[in-house]
Amino acid sequence: MAKFFILIGPPGAGKGTQAKIVAEKHGLVHISSGDLFRENLKNQTELGKQAQGYISRGELVPDDLTIRMVRERISRPDCQKGALLDGFPRTPAQADALAGMLKEFDSKVELVPLIEVPTEILIERLSGRWTCRAQGHVFHEKFNPPQKTGICDFDGSELYQREDDQKATVVNRIKVYSEQTAPLIEYYNSRKLLVRIDGTKSIEQVTKELLSVIEKV
Ligand code: AP5
Ligand code: MG
Image (cartoon, rainbow, N blue to C red; front, top):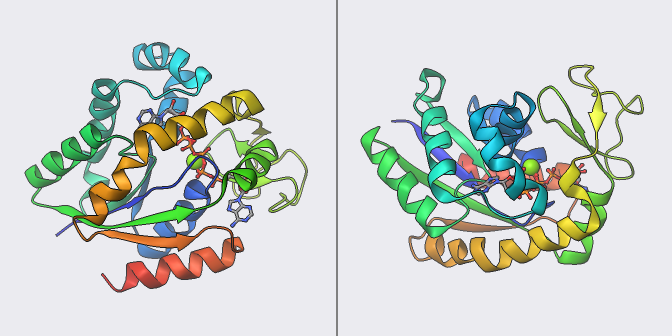
C-alpha cells in the first residue's frame, strides 16, 4: 500500500529543506504545493494566473483550486508508492479532501510530523533564503550557504529570492498559518498521527529526528 506523509509547520520551518532529503532517502515523491503553484506562475498557466494574487499577498489560494491541483499530482503513476507532502493540506477542508482522495487509491496518511520553530527565527530564515529556479532547492545565506553564491549546488540553476519572502508578506503568512493551518495540529493529533519535531536544531539534527519517526511506520 502506498505511504503518504505530511510535513506541517509554519513558513520557514524547514519543510522544503527536509522534504527533499527525506523523500530521497525513502524513495518517496516530494510534493510541495508551493512549488507546484510557482511552476504554474512561471509558465503563466490559467491556474498560475488565478493563484498569483493570493501568493504575492501571502494568503492561501482557495481550497477548490488547491485541491484540484494536488489531486492531479497525486494521481500520477510516480506516486504509487506514496509521497511526502509539503505545504498541503493547509486547512481542515483540504485535509478532509486528502483523506477522501487517498481512500480512492486504497491508501491513507501514515504520519504527520509537525516542525515547530518560533516566529523570530522564522523571519530570519526567510529573509536570508535563496531558492533554486529549476527545482525549488533551498539555501540560506548564513545557515546553509550554496558553494557558489547565486548558483544551486544540486542542479546549477540560478538562485533567487521569493517575492513572498519580503518582511511584510512573511508576517502575513505567519498570521495566516496560525489562523487557518494551526487547526490541523489538533485535527491530526486527535487522529493519533501527529508527531512534534523541534525545528530549531541544525538541519542535520532535524533530518535525523524525521528519519527516525518515519522509519517506525
Ligand atoms: P509554500 O511554498 O508552501 O511556503 P510556506 O509554507 O510559507 O513555507 P516555506 O516554503 O516558506 O518554508 P519551508 O518550511 O519550506 O522552509 P524552507 O525549508 O524553505 O507556499 C507559498 C504560498 O503558496 C502560500 O503562501 C500560499 O499562497 C500558496 N499555497 C501553498 N500551498 C497552499 C495550500 N495548501 N493551500 C493554499 N495555498 C497554498 O527553509 C526556510 C529557510 O530556512 C531556508 O533558507 C533554509 O535554508 C533555512 N533552514 C531550514 N532549516 C533550517 C535549520 N534547521 N536551521 C537553520 N536554517 C534552516
Ligand atoms: Mg517550502
